[in-house]
Image (tube, rainbow, N blue to C red):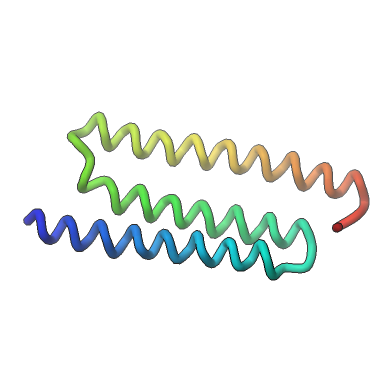
Length: 97
């Protein structure tokens, strides 16, 4: 059973890393600030979610799993707040540079 959990962990964490890489490519390739923000927030949230799901079978009991999920939720919340603040600043400034 441990081998199955290990294979699941490696495959799901690898998928999460792929989404992080895709977000980085979007950050470098998209033309303006708002599309870069969109790429980063969507893809990084999915990537971190996959990493957390992949690490859940490796957690030491329920408390370890709750810590992983709470970290994911805190990153979701802080990412949404920071994205709104950056997008508001970009709109207020009136420039996309």
